[in-house]
Image (spheres, rainbow, N blue to C red):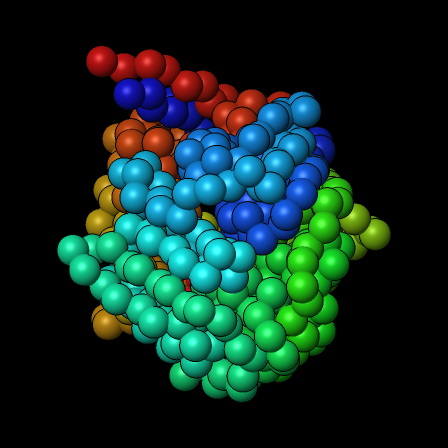
Length: 420
Ligand code: UD1
């Protein structure tokens, strides 16, 4: 198992290019099951989650071929399997998208209960409610979800909680259904718009993605086509925070600045200068970071997937900050690790109270999940006077492409070491 070793205290300078969005990619790949033809998906991040989904698509019978490191050609006309029960795929949260896609195309699907990062209970009742409303019969036996339908018929579905996964999954099940499906109280994240754009490019009729109400008019068939994945809002945010925590000056490129608004606003409150271009942000750290209060919310609110990274930035801001987790039940598991660096944090329910310290100490840290792993890297970039070693980096590799190469190119002293 590898680990990341960091000698912190280096200011980051230069340019970093952001890859395609993980959370869009892990929805678009299953969505290609709906296409009775060839999908070419460009700007895919080269990460473990994409590799796992590629294997899953092949085991369903699709013929896939990487045209280059970031472009995958998928012929889903040959898909014959309706079950995805492999252990690898079941560890991923996004495996649930295979349910919506297989159900939508074949009227039957069998998928292992989704795993993914552990943030407390992560129910899928809203996905099931949506499928049932469309006319599917759902059974959950021995941790396997089975969905069957003679015919899916469009209807009106109100989501009781704003859920990214349920919004996308219902959209997938509905594109080939008879009639019109209306999803109310839909999630609005950039990758929801991206999945809708992909589906529309292949011949679907999805309107309103990015608003509270999505209308999907069923079509007979999706056709071959080419699509390029949206830039990764969370990867971009992680590098913006890396620039700020190291006192750096970094151009974060190949992004949609509008997607970064909630983070940019909070960072500006902390004294960070952020200059905006068409497809980049330049992040210039101040001499002193100021404390602030953050609450995570569904988009366009502050993303929960940047909560751990932002919390690290707050640990070295002058004054007392608060971080409220407003999306998940329990997303503070990483804080015990972070305290090992000398950070002063107290957790009260879904609120973390963070008293700024001058610096963080180098130590051994464990990635407890994907974004927590990114947060540990940020702590390591800041910690001076020795080596920070990050273990369990398999989580980080699930969602960040070439993280150590990108940071090293910005001037960080970071390398990967294989350990026994
Ligand atoms: C997705 C993202 C994840 C991100 C999260 C919130 C993917 C693969 N993962 O996860 O990175 O952190 O959005 O932006 O895109 N809920 C229910 N019932 C349901 C579904 C969700 O109660 O059927 C609750 C969840 O427990 C949570 C909230 O709704 O409290 C939001 O979850 P959701 O948006 O569905 O997150 P995921 O799709 O799992």
